[in-house]
Length: 300
Image (cartoon, rainbow, N blue to C red; front, side):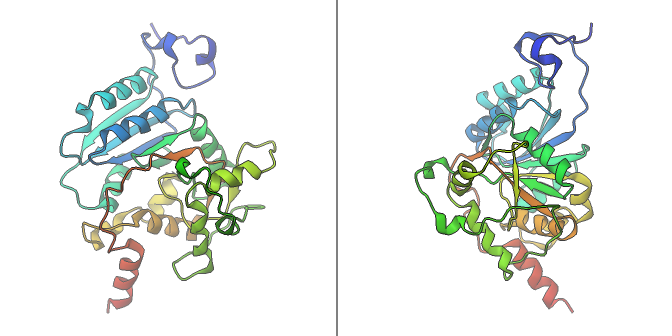
């Protein structure tokens, strides 16, 4: 017997509760959701809960776990994995140790992917229902290398920062390739992603036929949807081999390389909520883009 969904199941890829016990054919994912995690099982469970609220498009989840104790042994994580699988999602949790830095962790995840799009989602981000669909619609409409939803800290909801929001600039037309580095004027756009700036900007937007707006970025952290082929062509995170194990900013460097070839954009409103936990990377002495640039400049 194959799955014969009824009601809302007929129009969405997520199998709702009435169909969880039925036999069903395996879906072909259009998005591989890639989650690096380390010693944050409670946060990961919240992240997975956000994914469980997404209807479309069909997606699979791969978790690369570098925790001391496997996160799959955590009761809350295991429960959310069961929910996702009951919904028809493929979920794979892989132990990947010893840690060799975030760039290597992300490259490992990228090598597991086979879908046309990959969503790099940090393990401390909750996604509003409908966020994955909005990102995919934006990526396909804009035709660029990636789109992102910058994570928002809702503890700052009452903290209005118009001086930081002043650098907001929409994409009024096709997204174009851009060169961004720490010395370029475009780098100042990073202020947009502080606190809850995007929440305040989104509240001022005029609704139109689309339910998202594209804008120019310095980079996007925590929730980035790539065209898989574009990220691979730009080298992915292979530069991990040229970095020490302890580093930060690997996502920034990868995005800049894709932006230079294919362009990239942020989208509003952002449905990505940061859980505002302490960073797992307190040592920030080595920033990937700076370290790689210095290596290139000093190589004979």
